[in-house]
Length: 144
Ligand SMILES: C/C=C/C(=O)SCCNC(=O)CCNC(=O)[C@H](O)C(C)(C)COP(=O)(O)OP(=O)(O)OC[C@H]1O[C@@H](n2cnc3c(N)ncnc32)[C@H](O)[C@@H]1OP(=O)(O)O
Image (tube, rainbow, N blue to C red; front, top):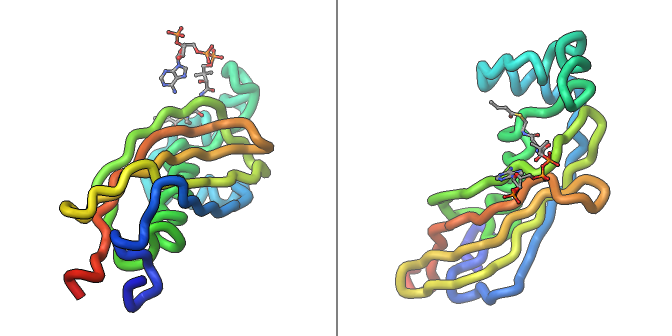
């Protein structure tokens, strides 16, 4: 482990995983619209959103994807690591009140480059809402 309790590249093995869960509130969606400046009416205007195939407001996809960043930063690989890339597929909507669980699983460890590839998935009540892959630059015990 590195001094901030993150995993060094030498600590990582395929199959290791970590998760966080967070309930997405109406306030989260409004705050995220302000922070991101993304004011798509499907997120913030219920009278419009009910006319869409979603039948009501849905969360910004990137808001929910932020929970993937939270697991990567806080748990696995954890503090001290750097986000290099992320693919995302938004498979199903997240609605106000939904509890999103983001789970990351180590898929590949490239010790020589200090790179780690992780499968990343977000679920609501067991249903996949987001899937993709993250690339991280990890700390190394060899460089300490
Ligand atoms: C500007 C920012 C806006 C936002 O942030 S909006 C919020 C984030 N986005 C969402 O919440 C959308 C979540 N996704 C969905 O709700 C569903 O997804 C859809 C309603 C868009 C589609 O669902 P369905 O009509 O049931 O389609 P299917 O039967 O699941 O798939 C039909 C074809 O479309 C491909 N596909 C579906 N979703 C994705 C995706 N996210 N990325 C890439 N491809 C996708 C499938 O594979 C398949 O393809 P094949 O016909 O060739 O088998």
